[in-house]
Length: 320
Image 1 (spheres, one colour):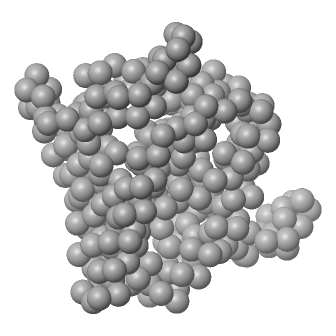
Image 2 (image 1 turned 90 degrees about the vertical axis):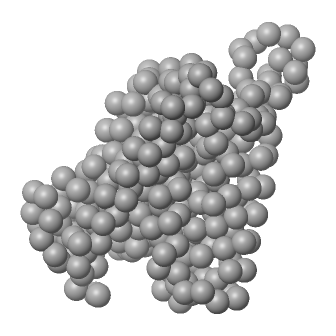
C-alpha cells in the first residue's frame, strides 16, 4: 500500500498527469458551486490521502528549499509534480468556468440542471465511499454526527460583510478547510461569510489583488488543517471516513435541485440593492424541468461511478 501511495503521488506517465489534471478540474468546478465540495471529487477519485500527505509535507524546511530554488531537494521532500498538476487543474476550472457557472446559477432553469448534475455526483460518491466502511456503532455514530453537522452548516443564513483585506483573508482561511472536506462546500462557507460574490467576481474579472488575499488565507488554513485531518485519517480511519461520508449526506439537502427563495437581501435591508437569495426552501420536483434534471442527475452518477472504478484499478496497478 505504501508503494501504491508513492506511485499515485509521484506521477510518471502522461496518463497519470492527465488523470491528476482532470481530477483538479473536477475539484475546481465543484468548489465554484455553493453546496458542492472539491474534497468530494478528491475523495472519490482516490487522491484524497495523497493530497493531504502532500500538503502536510509543507514546513519551514520546504519553504527554505523553495526560496533557495533547490527544486530537486524540494521534490524529494514533497510531491511537487503531483500538487502542481492538481492545482493547475483546479485553477484552470476556476478561471475557465467562473463566468459560465455564475451565469448558470443566476438562471432558474440552468440552476436546476446544474444542481441535478452535482446531486448525482455527490450521491454516487456517498455510495462509492460508503461501501468500504465497516459496520459498527462507532462508524454509525460518526456518520450520523457528520450528516447532522453538515445539515446545520448548509442551513445557516449567509452574512453580509464588507470585502476588506482582513475579511477576505479570514474567509479564505476558513473556506479552504471546507474545500478539502467532502460534503462541506468552501464556496458555501464564502457565502455564509458574505464574501462569495466578491471572490467569484474577482475570479471572473481577473482581480488578482482580491484573489491573492484569499489565497494567502487559504495557505495558512490548509497547512494547519491538513495536518489535523491527516492525523485523523491515519489513526482513526474508519471513524474519520464515516464522518466525511456523513458530511456528504448532509450536503444533499443544500444541492437538491428544486428550490424557492424565502429570504433575500431585499427582505433584510428594505431597499433593492442587488437581489441575492439568502435562504432557500426545497420544493417537490417541477414537471417542466423534471426529465432534463433526471438525465443530468444520472449523468453525474454515472460519471462518478466510472471514474471511481477507473481510480481503483489505477491504484491497484491494473491496466485501464
